[in-house]
Length: 114
Length: 117
Image 1: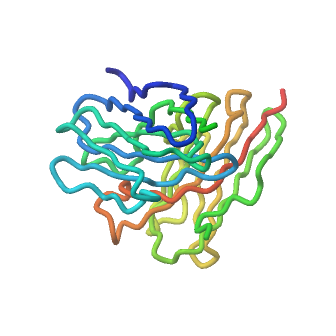
Image 2: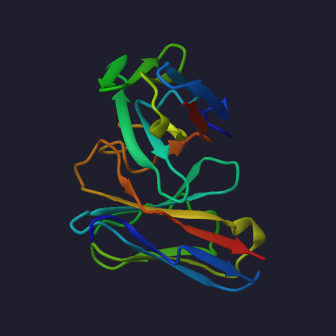
């Protein structure tokens, strides 16, 4: 597609449930990133995929968080046993491998854990 | 530990005047800096960047200035237009560590700019 697509746009879930967030990057973009923005805070790096290399998972806040990417296409971010502090906007972005000028973000998934 | 700080949560500027958004960083390893603009319900969009080998980068109405000794950068928008009303995020990375400066950006908390017609 023309841009980075994320679904769902909004998700309300009960504490303790698992959630899965989806990201469709721009076709041909080899790099894919997940960030989150909690209320009143900056964007926080979570994970980075680049081609077939091992992902950089250094930003994942706990082992309840995991992400997968199928080849150079769709990625899913899974949060298990959600907690209220997981409430945030989860943003996905993609870029061409050799791009040093910033990447393209999706509109995000607003997750609310009640 | 906030390594990138935007100390002004909001700023109001009259249309046609200059808008100056400020950003400070603490990590001396940062050598590549970017500004993003975000409208409500949309993802951030890349605006302009600068590497530490420069002290100024200009793109149309947007100019970014970098003062390495002060660990400070600023974004100037002139003249300001109503469509510039948005939240502006400063971000930083280390080209020394990453290949292209994109892989792991550290963001500030943003400044909400309102342009008054």
